[in-house]
Image (tube, rainbow, N blue to C red; front, side, top):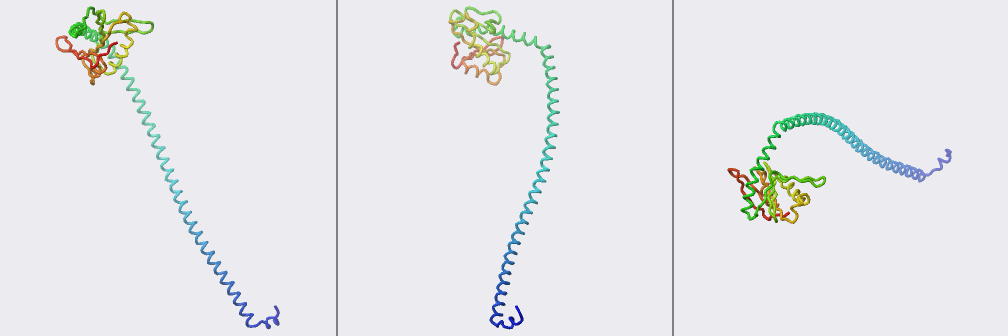
Length: 245
């Protein structure tokens, strides 16, 4: 624009130019403010993210420490377990040797004591079951053992007549597991002792001591129970519901 053209500008033109320029400045100011707000917002987000990253980093570091500590504890536990297993093995070896030595010293005595209890029980059982109404006509001397194929069974005391029989399991100490074992044995009795087929066979357990209520347990299972009295005599407890094999 030449000087001459500038001279031709009116006051109104100058006013419009000033207004337009002012408007542009104001618009630019608004944009600057908006940009400043966005920058501030972004800055806050960055600060927040930075804090989260710092927190996560701290947690990772703490987790790393915990992992190291846990690994250390696991190694220590493994070491203790290894020592414990070693000590246990050594104790088992010592116990096995002690048991073996005890069997050598007392095994024969235990067997002989069991035979003594059987010898005491046999005549007592005869009298007891005769009083019970079972007319015993034969008592086997010693324990009775039979084998059928690969299966073998031994009965400690066996009493019978033509129609009935009583099988007695004799123990120095009787446990519930002994009662269960005897019941399983009696279920196979006639399959091995064929001469008793057709007879009603009853079962009894006799012991010098009944542990943990095994006498009551035997009676609930349908067995007679013989307990020792003085002078080689035994008392009889009848089963709740007599089992017939």
